[in-house]
Amino acid sequence: MNESHIQTRICRIADGVPLKLGNMTIQTTDSEILLVTGWTNTVYFENIKKSTVLRELEELKASFNDLTKTYGDLNTIIDKNNLKVEFHMAYDDAGKVGIGLCSELNGNLNWYV
Image 1 (cartoon, one colour):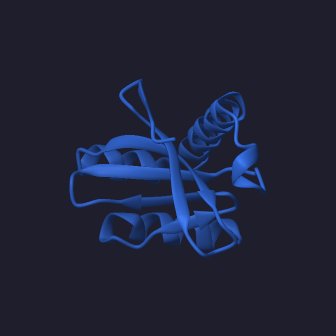
Image 2: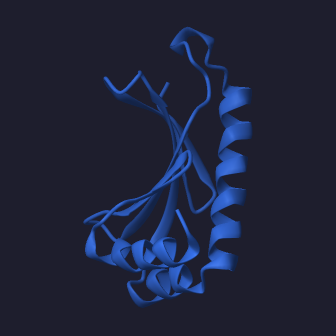
């Protein structure tokens, strides 16, 4: 995806259109949340470890931070719509189902598994 296309897609996030960039999905919710979901690289669910998920969560947050620095409109959307950013890590079972692993909102980490 080129930069112009990414910029256009970022502007549509506030309209409820999700943006998928690599291993990250960004979308708004009905509850004034900007949901940033990262998908674990772990292939088999039984191999999921909290330490790995935490590392991937930190990578997700860093990637999102880089994105906000590159595309200032993302910060404008967050501020104008008074959105809170919630980070989620999830497991993708080959497209069959997404299983939430953990989330972080305002520095509070919640585990689902």
